Length: 345
Ligand SMILES: [Ca+2]
Image (cartoon, rainbow, N blue to C red; front, side, top):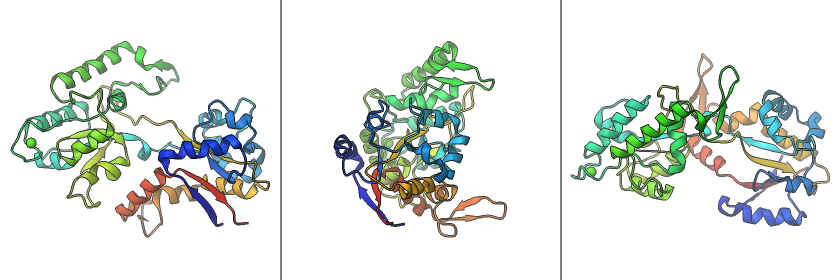
């Protein structure tokens, strides 16, 4: 299959695609929607085929929906039909994570922290030493994180899901995070402690990603929290010594406190694709989307090519061969916001 891709920059994707959808004419066969169609605007406009009527041609998608009932429920419209195929975020490598300045950690001879206590010790060491070696012990900022990311970074260690607002425990009982008063109080007390000790940047309420990036360029910050791909795509790149081989701002697993940490931050449905009714013979587009949901395509997406970007060891584990290739592929896939058009018949 040859695909005629129409590439649109992520920054003006919505502005470019919304008018096309509003006019409803000359749409490509497959469209990535500019939003999640929460108000069913495009569905009620009759722009897209109900894909559930084509499940005979979508064995991979059917299998995915059957094994992910919560995602299936989210995708099912009020009229009972499913109109879209999602780009899903169900793996940990797509989640935001804590990133730590690995050069600073190495200089101190400290291990990668796994608990809040260890992390706080690292921050104190960053605060108290001339980590960037400019002769000034006072210009190091231990932690630069946006206010929006703080609950994602530290909530889980207190057993709190402050993003969705609720969670179900092992017995299936639903809890509402902010109302878990004891844990929530401990969480706030912890943050207050960071602030008072000068570990959390004073201007954290107004801090932006651009400012954090600039702090990395000046090598004055010890840790941050952001989407995983930004460690290579954005932050580590700010350091002149970064070659792509060894990360400088490096992601670490979720920190644990009284509760075991967990990744938190992204809706399992990140984007949605529909097959437009401009396509009078939609089966090829439908089969293509189904292939995208297959295990084969997902393996390509995540791992690349066996023998080139990864190898499989005797015990069945996949090992990354070329870190750069993976990193590059990762970035371009993540930033991809495409309208595409399978034109070859
Ligand atoms: Ca310094």
